[in-house]
Length: 77
Image (cartoon, rainbow, N blue to C red; front, side):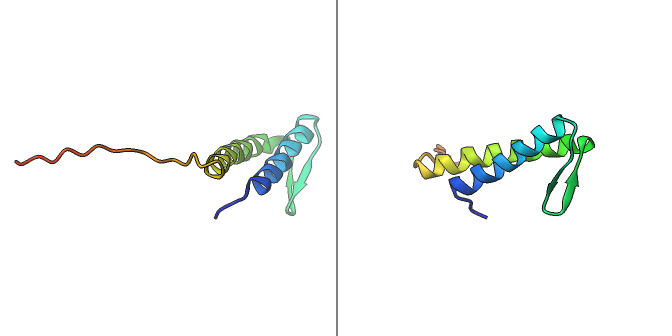
């Protein structure tokens, strides 16, 4: 699924807000799922995921996609 930069930033901010609320000892709800201090690891995994997605989306939006050059040397065996 392809996301826009704005969508990724919005979702990343949601998870950052969740982490902040949990760190303050509160619970947080996202899509009918209640997250509490015990779920801090899950929230941090989501933050890392959305940070990686943001890097990918910004790279492709600026034309710096993941192009790789491979050198192939034909050999007769």
